[in-house]
Image (cartoon, rainbow, N blue to C red; front, side, top):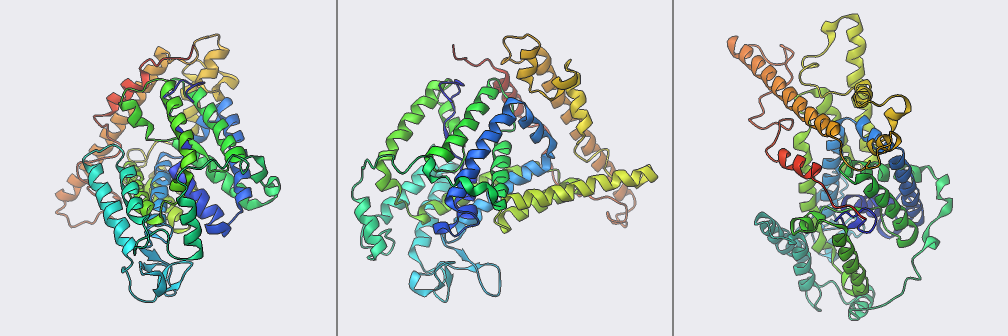
Length: 504
C-alpha cells in the first residue's frame, strides 16, 4: 500500500471479518460450517473477484445498488455480532446457550459448568474471577481511557489483563496446571522464537473447496464485507483498492488468515503527521518484528479481548443512527438485516433477508400506484431515501459519459478520454459532489418540514386522532437526524479533495 499507492494506510485482517472467519465459518477447533482450508480458498478467490470488480468499476456499482439503510445496518449488525462473541465463551464468558432459552447468564468457574462447549452453568453464576478481571480491568478501564481520548486505549486494556493473567498459579491464570496449560506455558517462556515460515503457503488451501456450496456463501459474505468497508472514493483510491484486493488473495494463499483490509487505526498515524506511503511501510516493518514474539501474542487470554470486542461493537453500532428510521420501507428491512446478522451468527443471512424485504416493500407500492397514485404510502416522496438505478446512470451521463463508459469507474473514463492525470479530481467532479451534498441537505429539510406539518395537523385536531389512523408513520425523534448535515462534513470534503503526494 505504501510503495504502490503511496497511501498512509496499514493493512491487517479486518476486526469484523476475522471474527466472522474464525467463529462463524471455521469455528472453534474446526467445528464450524466449513474447514480451515476451505475458508482460505474462499478468501483467495474473493481477493481475485475484488480485483476484477475494481479494475472494471463494478465495485462502485455494487455498492451503489445496495440501499443506504441496508449498508448502514450491515455495519451495525457486525457490531452486534462482535458483541455476542465478546460476551460468549470466546470472550468474557458472560452468556451461554441454555435448554429453555436461547441465552442465559453464565460466568461460572469451569468445575461448575454443565456444558464445557457452551460454558453453560449449573450454579455459581458470575463467580469466575476471569469474568470480573476482563470486565473491570479490560473493559471499564479501557472505556475510561477512550473517554479521555487516550491513544492506544484498546491495546492498553488487552496488555493489562494479559500481564495479570500470565503468572502461575493464580485463580485468573492463563496457564492452569493441566496438560494443555503446561504446554502453553512452556511455549510462552520462550518469549521470542523463530519458527520459520514452513507452515505458510498454498499447502493450507483446500483447492477442492469450490464444489461445496457453503464455501460460496462464505465467499459472498467476505466480498460484501470488504465492499461495505471501502464504499467511498478518494484521490488515489483505485490503486489503493487494487493493492487491497491483491493483499486479500495473498492473505488466504500464503499467510493463512482472514481477508486483509486497511484498518481504522491508520487514522492515528495520519493525525500524527503521516501523509505518505512511508507511514505504511514503517507499520509493515513493526508488524514483521511482532511475528517473532508469537509466544507472547498467542497466549493472550480470551477474557482480555472479550471487552475489546464489545467496545468495538459499540463503535460500529454508531452507524445505526444514520438509518432512515422515518420511513418504514427503509427502517424495517434495515432492522431485520441488523438483527439477523448476530442472532443467526451469519452475515450473509442478514443481508439476504434485508434485501428481500426491501425489494417487496419498495416495489409493491409502485405496482399499486399504477392503479392510483393515491395508493403510495405516506412519505413516499418526502421521507423515503432516494433509490433509482436509472438516476444513477443519468448522473454518470451528465459528466459526458456515453455508451459503455457509463459503467466504467471515473479514473478509467478519464483515461479513455485522453486525460493522463486520471487520478485527480476534475472541477466537474468536485462540483457534482458538492451538488449532491446540497441536494441531501435540501431533502433533509423537506422531510423535516413534512414531519412538522403532520405534527401541527395532529395538534390542531386536539390530539384525538392517532398517528396510525392518519397514515402517519413517523414520531418525533428529537433534534437529531441522521440525514441532516453535520459540522464535520465540510472538514471531510476538504480532506477528500486536498492534493495528496503521488508516487513518482
